[in-house]
Length: 264
Image (tube, rainbow, N blue to C red):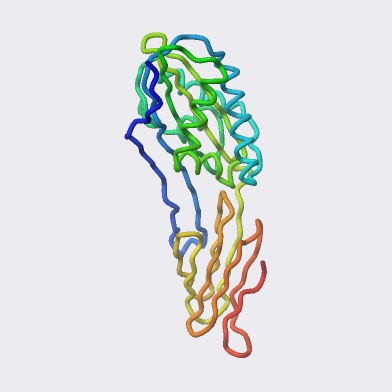
């Protein structure tokens, strides 16, 4: 008997950005975001073509992104190999989860030779006593991911540019496993610098992270996705902007005594 009721077990892991010591005027923003899938109960019979399910997931993921005004993702062979290997591992062993086998999505991407700025992963399994067609299995995986806020967020992240998908069937347990592995290569890492040429310490926020910049210091930020810079000046209006890649920003004190941000 087939049931589409999702498991109540969900998990979200993330690595927070890090702020560097000020004596080394460089800061790195680095993110790894992963989301655990929604299992679906039932039994399964063979039938779907795994390669067609994989291509269907890529196609429908990109359709979903276009509907939400996001750029489509390009298939990367290294991400695809890492996703396929992990799906096969879960199908072979029955071990399920982003840390199954003792590895992480980032480690699996590195082992496949993918040099990344950002990695995100969605996983899922499906199980139906009546079996699946290729189209039905593809639709079941996509429906579960779209209806889960964490998985939906991964599929729609603006900074991602590439994808790899793996699908595998367990001959012993009957489950179908799927892995979406998303990435942005390190070659597309964005950077900008901010220099404090004023005579006072300046506090600012980059995304959700807060920083302090003493006078005569310059910090370079590396980001993997578009991020908003917020600067606030005591006693005057602050400013917000999304720094362009390669921007060189400079905080100065104007003739009227107010602080000003130069460059964009």
